[in-house]
Amino acid sequence: MDIWDEILLRLRELEMIEWLTFGVNALVFLFSKKIASSYGEVKDAEKMNARLRILHGFNLVVFLSFVVSVAVQSTDPTKAGTGSLTAANVSQSCLILLIAYLLIHLAEALLLKRYGQAFTVMGFTRRVETSTSRTLELLAYTIISLVTVILLFNIWAPSALQTTGAIGFIAVIIFTTKDYWMRDFIAGIILISNERIQRGQVVAIPSEDVLAVVLEIRGMQTNLRDLVRANDLTLPNSIFLRERVDIFCENPGGPFRDYVDFKIGYGAASDQVQRFLKTVHLRAAEESQGIEAESGPKIALKENGDHAARWRLGYVLAKPEELLAVRDAVNLAAYQLQGEFNLELSTPSTHVVTSDASSASSASITGSDGSS
Image (cartoon, rainbow, N blue to C red; front, side, top):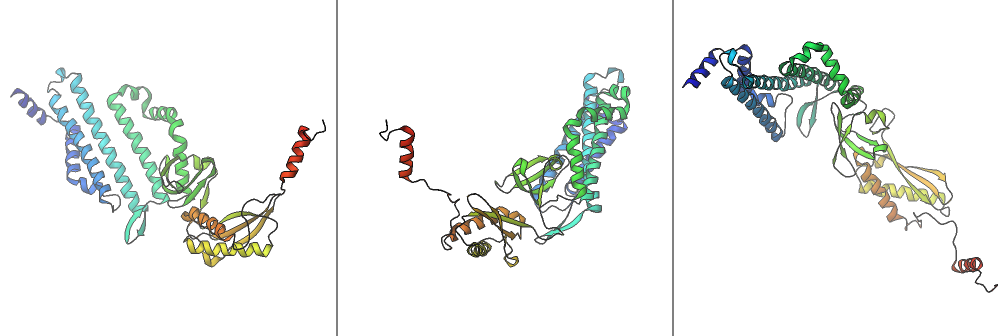
C-alpha cells in the first residue's frame, strides 16, 4: 500500500516536463491515424498502416518510460538514486525523439501542401514533391536533427554543452562527421534545386555501369530502378556530380534519339544497305512500342574501317525507359532480315588462308620438304 501511496503522491507533484510527456502521449494516441496520413494522400493502405504502427509503437515506448520514471523516482530529492535519474533521462529522451518525429512529419506536410505539385496517375491524384519543397524539407530535417542532438546531449552529458556551448558543440559534430555525410548531403541539395535530374527519368552512369530509372532523390542517396536487372539501386548523391551522367529525356533541342551500329562488308551496295536498314526500322517499330515510326530512320555511314563499313541506324524513342527493349528489337530485326537482302552482319574476313598455302608455309618453316 505504501508503494501506491507514494505513486499517488508523485502524481500530485508532477513537474511541467512530466505533464508535457503525458499530454503529448494523449494527443498522439487520439490523433495518430490523422498524423500518419497527414503528409499526402496514400493510396496503398498498407503504407499508411505501417506508419500508424510505427507511431503507436513510438508512443507506447514514451508512455512506458514515463510510467517507469514516475514509479521509480522518489518523492524525496535526497533519496533519488542513479536508477531514478536514469529513468527520468530515458523518459525525457523518448519524449524528445517523439516530438522530433512529429515535427519532421509536420514540416513535410506543410511544405508539401505549400510548395508541392498535384500529380494524377490513372485517376488518382496526390501532391508530390517539387525541387523547392524537397530542398526546404532537407533544411528542416537538418535543423530539427541538430536541435534534437543538442537536447539529448543536454540530458545525458550536460557538461559537454557547458564546456563548448551550443554553437561550438554543433561545429564539433559537423567537423567530426563531415566526411561521412556532408559531401552527399550538399550534392543532394544541388541535384534537387537545379531540377536537371528528376523522378521518372532514365539516366546512365558509364563509370558505374548503370542504366536505370530515377525513383527518388533523398538527402544523401538516390534510389534507382535498374533497367537491365530490374532491381533497385542506391547510389550516393556525390556520384551524380563527380561522374558523367547521361540523362535520357526530351528537351528543347528535340526528342530523344538512340542508334544501333552495324558492320557490313564492302561488297554490299550503298542503296542495298539503306533499304535493309529502313526495313529493319519498320520491323522493329512493329515489334516494339518504344520507337516513333512516324519520325522515320536516320541512316548514316560513320566509318570505313579495315574489315567493314560501320553503318548507323538512328531512330526516335517514344519512351526512354524502353531503350534496351528497342535496341533488342532492332538487332533481332536485322538478324532476321539479313538473308532477305543478301547481307551478312558478321565481321567479314579480309583474307583467306587455304589449307595448301598453310601446309606449304608450315613445310618451309619446319624444313620438312626434303631439302635437308
